[in-house]
Image (cartoon, rainbow, N blue to C red):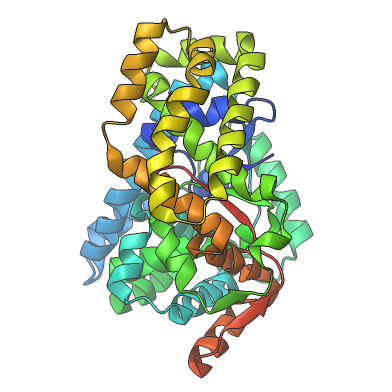
Length: 407
């Protein structure tokens, strides 16, 4: 199963129908939002919000700036969850992630940020602030709450307590909490850091999860510059990998560009139709996938980038018309109109040709994969040390990245 990371699917445009079709033989994993386990503790964060509102400390404004972003994220999560319910189980499965978000993980996230060659402003532009706000919410009201209020409890005790609380979550009133320790911690956070910096740090908490996967469906394409900025080089040459493994990333890009204009953006009308395609067009979908993989393999070996760019349009028109028609139930005129439409944006197909060239010749996508692979194997302290020495860490493998959007 391939996971969509690092963001939970909280916006409709992140839930591509093309993505669900391409991976329909092995449904993708959509991760649940970070704060999904927060409320099993029995505490009521909204009670804490009221306390801050009443006291109006100097850090109240940045704190409520964060809360405003978090509330918008929660609205998005509820909207997308309801929208995708008809295809849940068929097109995707939900995954509850377990990873460190406490004080130690926060320190590691800070070190990881400092190892990047990007400026602070560039890093902030690379994250999704809404996903980061939910990560920060969970850090404060789940991980930090447990650390501060149950300091002597081990993991087994906390898990057992969480399971017990979860069973009765809907039947019991919120726990009456003395918020002093959380209040003091929030003062430390919001009085000494701007909100953008806090969100960037919180966003890094999921990064170590990326390294354990053979392929990542990267939900945030803006992360590419950050990943390639980490001090990592791959010692594994592109040609040492199975070409089908490498070029499947490019095949996905071909498939997405061809199918997405018909099935996206997902809405209440398109989701049931998507469900019907998954149930009734499995063989046709597999045929189009294989056709796209064949195109990627054939075109990917073109050594001249300019020539490659010229070939793509003709190859698509000649090779995949019938398969697109079979998957999407379009007549010939509709297929011609679709292909003319998708090729009207030449930048898209120039981008795909650059991606193909990059895959085969060891460009940025492989460099980013090396960083993904190394995130947990070496640890953020190793990144920080390498950055201080202006040296590159060496790893002998790389992960594949399926970006959710085009270049």
